[in-house]
Image 1 (cartoon, helix red, strand yellow):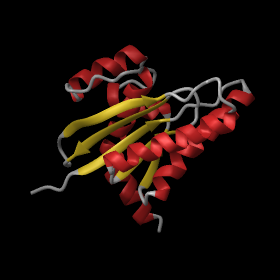
Image 2 (image 1 turned 90 degrees about the horizontal axis):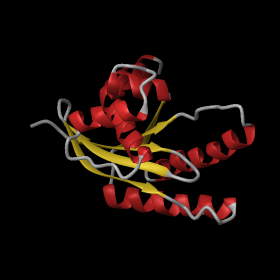
Image 3 (image 1 turned 180 degrees about the vertical axis):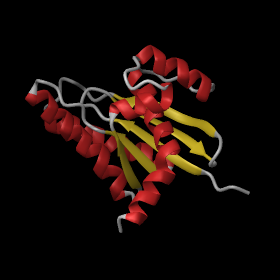
Amino acid sequence: MTAVTRILGIDPGLRRMGWGVIDFDGVRLSYVAGGTIKPDTELALSMRLAELYRELQHVLQQMTPDEVAVEETFVNKDARATLKLGQARGIALVVPALFGCAVAEYAPNMVKKTVTGSGHADKKQIHAMLGHLLPKAQPDSDDAADALAIAITHAHNRRAARLLKIATA
């Protein structure tokens, strides 16, 4: 019998943080759950970060993932927006670490290429492939869909990442 690994994918964001959980037995992917954390945008930045922290902590308590994958920050021309996204991303990295989960990071283009075959795929293509790979998934937002794509990317790359870690140790 093959062990099943539960993977939580996180698409970090300050206004919307997508999350998606899949089970992976080494061959098959199975949809477990997904959603979007939406802190009150009227709150001060510190309170929004606290809300993201609490809600993500709740997801980890409920879903008990074995491994976590987070999308790397997309750097744009607006330095302030990038910095704020980085703060939300910090929450996405630290909460799973506090639960003792291994956390992997993936570039957006790698996620798109893994799921659709094209590193420049759009949201529509990601949704279409999720329909094929995880037919029971009905993501409530693009962010939740991206989080599932991140989890799938980790499922397909986790063995290579583990071997690379062993080789460089």
